[in-house]
Image 1 (cartoon, protein in one colour):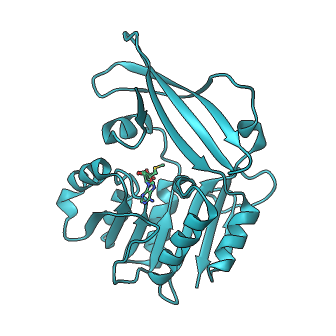
Image 2 (image 1 turned 90 degrees about the horizontal axis):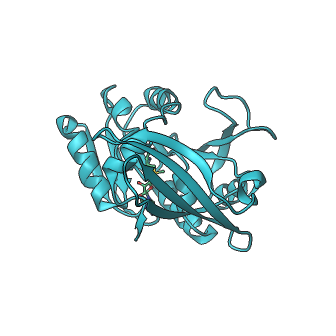
Image 3 (image 1 turned 90 degrees about the vertical axis):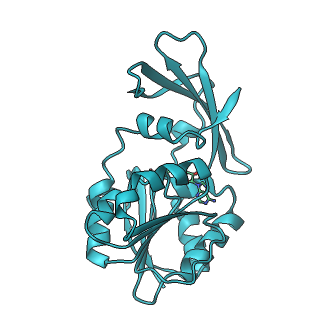
Length: 246
Ligand SMILES: C[S@@+](CC[C@H](N)C(=O)[O-])C[C@H]1O[C@@H](n2cnc3c(N)ncnc32)[C@H](O)[C@@H]1O
């Protein structure tokens, strides 16, 4: 059976143990701008903790009910400062504005067409005050990964909480008409004969399209970084980090 990658928060946390290079960057941005902070596609609360630990008010929006439940449990001792709400970032309406709104770790690519991205931007815009900032962190899609030969490629490895070692490989099919990359992940756990298979889709948004959609939504692009050290976005950049205002 092919499973949804966002159905199992324990698996997500275990598999992504290595994703730590964005934490300081996001925590520092929150400290600089102050709260309240709104994270779109908040996941398991991975980026919430370093914000809340600074005493900053935090709201997370997340589509997966299993992830929302997991994040709430993780953040329970901060319930005076933090909330995680189940919702869709394309149309959530919170009747509140937030000094800092962000979407991290490539989550924007889960909006599978430009209309959904436009709805999302309009939703962010309505929750941002005149002096607030909106930040996007995603990788820059690269043809080498999109058009590579049809075979399995190594992605990552991790230990399950129960101790077994797991190696993850992937295949992908990029549809250049829709600009959607269809990805399958194969989880090969030591001692198990069967491989678990997960699938997910990512809408490849290239920087020129990101610029256009942000501008059409009314945002002013203030900074474009190519890395967490704030190097400007350039031809060799692996990341596209946008900082925008109204
Ligand atoms: C790559 S994970 C990132 C999670 C978290 N931000 C992090 O950095 O660990 C992407 C998340 O986006 C969520 N998501 C996808 N589409 C969404 C939508 N329309 N509204 C809200 N969340 C969404 C998924 O359920 C998943 O938790």
